[in-house]
Structures are given as structure tokens and as C-alpha cells.
Image 1 (tube, rainbow, N blue to C red):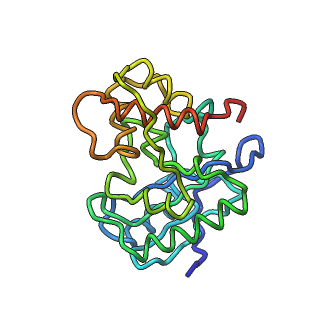
Image 2 (image 1 turned 135 degrees about the horizontal axis):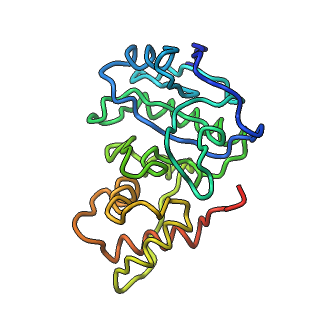
Length: 225
């Protein structure tokens, strides 16, 4: 169920660009109502295009044609004004709990509609942690990216065969995919693992490098965007 609940926190997309990225967040609040209040409070200066409750209710807070304020300081490829290029979806979640069936089903329906409407490729469905390594970790390791990938709403890379883990190759591959390679290495590794290798621990592994290489080969960033 989708309900309009306008937030005052938006402006025009700079350069009248069309959205070509979707960013998924969690609210890190104790309740849906608390999240709604913050996202609709003019004084908070934050918003998103959509907020989905644990029960699957979808609130449309900002028109997709407008620029919501959800990404903060972030970067993907050559894009640093992520808000102008993206549609933001907030999931009501405290940051520690699993994402239930109802919220995931509503997210899938919403994503399918957005991707079709704006012709956004699935590799540009991103986590907040992808665009803000070290600053943000949402939607976190409990979010089921594999489920979205099975439904062709996100990507799940295979492991390209790599014999020896190379930091240089790892960073280069992630930069080609879109990550900000200027952040410290450990920060980049952590952000990558949150999304693509949540069971990974310790030093860089051949698995990390193989996954990163697969991303760069199959989904290279368009630096002209």
C-alpha cells in the first residue's frame, strides 16, 4: 500500500538530471513513526523519496522528480551530488534487526516500479554504505541483497579466479565499479564486505579481490554520468 505523506525537505535536481541510481538506507530509529517524523520535519533537513514500514506500508515523501536529502557526503564514480542523481528509499529498521517479509516484499515492488520507470540498471541499486564508505553502514549486513539479486533487482557478483590477493588490484577494481578509492584502504575493504562479502574477516583475501574484479569486468562505471 502506497500513501502520499509529503516532506518539506527537497529541492530541484541540479541541472535537471534524471535519477539513475537508487540508494537503500535503514532509518536507525526505534519506530516507523519516529522515522516519519524526522523525515518530514523541516528542521531536520533530511528526507527520502520513500519510507517503508515494517508492515510494508510505503510512504511517498518526496516526488521522484525532486531532489530528496538522503545521501549526505557521498560519491559514486564521478558523481559527488548523489542526491541529484538518485532516488532514496528508507527502510524502517533499528539497524540491528533482520528485515521481515512484509518490508522486503514492498521494497521489491517499489524497486521494480522505479527501475522500469527510469530505466535504471540493477547494478546502480546501491547501499548507503557503498556511496559513503566509513561514514555509513546501512542497510547493513542483515539486509538480504541476495534476495534482491534473485529477483533481478540488484547484483550478486561471481568470484573471478584470483590466486594472490593484491591491494592494488582490489582498489583498482572497486574504483572501476564506482567506489571512492580515495578513502583509506581498510575503510574501503569494510564497505565492500558489508555489501558483497559479509562473512569476510581479517586481511584482504583472494575471494575479496575476485569479487571486486568481477564487479569491474561486468559493471564498469560510466564516468560520463
